[in-house]
Image (cartoon, rainbow, N blue to C red):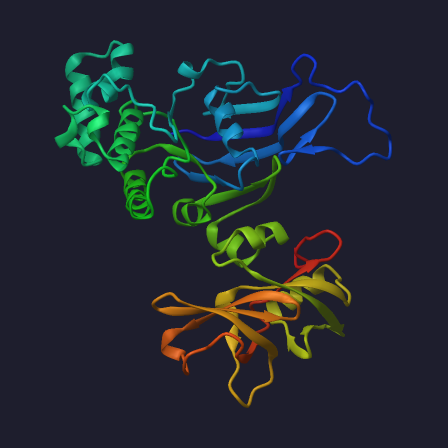
Length: 395
């Protein structure tokens, strides 16, 4: 129900008294880092140059490793953290100095944050009572939210009598009864077991279709990001690394960090050669040479990329075992993991640990530790990254 704009947002935590060292940094001294955060004369920089336009009713996911600044960004939107510089605009209104209660946002926390002495009904109704809404309006909104979340039967229970998944439903219900313009969710599923996480992901997808709200969701779990988000924002050390749809960041990672972070199992990386021959491009690894597809060649040509040593990325699902009469890259099996529909072969090749996903329907027998195999890949699935900048050379 609202657009959200973050314009050049920055968050700096100032040094507390006595924390900053008096010793000045020398001109040639490298930039100091502490828990992945940049340290400047102002203090510790948690979020740097954050720019993002969120459309009305869009579901945006901020994802990245611990300490990357995603929760800090969410808390700045909520008003729980002061914005050091930049502009936060919600529904066309600058809200940097607007109190959290006046921003028309609702937040779901990682630890549920329910009142233990109140029933589920009273927890969900609490914010509406503070607004002095009529009793009949409160009752209607609470029961509608409870029905959406399938917790009507728990309305008279206290939180301690509920499971983790049920408590999280109550926390979400408490947020949606307010009919907020923006719903903020800070790692809401991280305390649940794997089965409950899968169920709650599906519930959040259904919920999103039933309420007219803009969502900003924070997680360190790339599976959640890929399944929930219209777009995902990948962060590292306070900076945005890439913004795009789940498919875009999976198919076209902007740099080595994104390539290694998105996708499970992680992308295989190799030291390889990119070879340009006229308007054609090839990658060569361990004597195996393959031409890149026309779409990739066109992007490399546009950037006038020349022959060079590169980091080559190939996803495990795009890595194939060779037939006996085919030429490929030699490898030695280290571990064979049966995953049901597929086998994950962990092999050693070209001085790297490599994962090959083999569908069980294509298995030609059992692979034991020490077995020699060969693998290959096609030119349409390779990614080439600069050795100097780590950036994808296609973009």
